[in-house]
Image 1 (cartoon, rainbow, N blue to C red):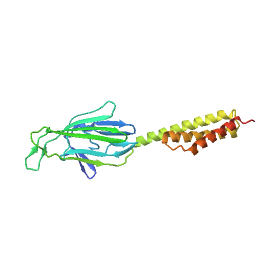
Image 2 (cartoon, one colour):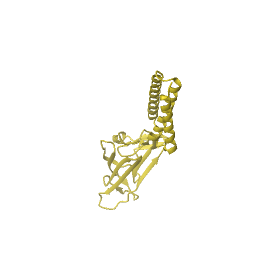
Image 3 (cartoon, rainbow, N blue to C red):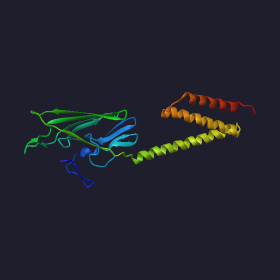
Image 4 (spheres, rainbow, N blue to C red):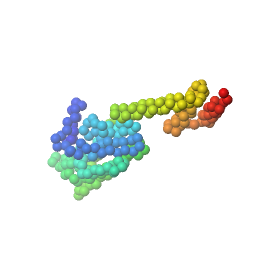
Length: 236
């Protein structure tokens, strides 16, 4: 029987469910991170913050692995200190077979899960060992779900960071413009200010967002800089 059952969008947890399922493990690499329970499952107890995220959006909200339709038992699990690799040792619970009264005893099958994130992709390896004396018919199934959820705290944090950086940069620009007006005419100072802003914006677009830098753009930057120099050093 499952630790969790769903009835009309409500989730009910068995009183015998393991306390380990309440704890979580975290993996992170660049803009991707994953939050899941110690079994390696995502969303085992219904709606939660668990999932596979990339750039603040959740792409996997549920990922459950089952052996012959049942949730494996947790033996141990660990995450490396750098949060790059997860491993879990699991085993089978008592599993009834098709024949009446025939049961595969627990701890016969060892299931190992290894998981890591790399370049925006989640990689997982699963291995099985049969420690019994006879062949077993084992079926592994998985349940995947996606909801595109973006945590509010992540969006709010990003918005606050963008707004605060924008305010700081705007204040710096106004301060520098004021200093320039002490030695330059207002027409020259404003023209120089806008020209440098245009060149800086184009440069940041190339460096941060990978925008193409064509020969025409390079020529435009050179002409703008020549015009700024001419205004600065023009007599009276």
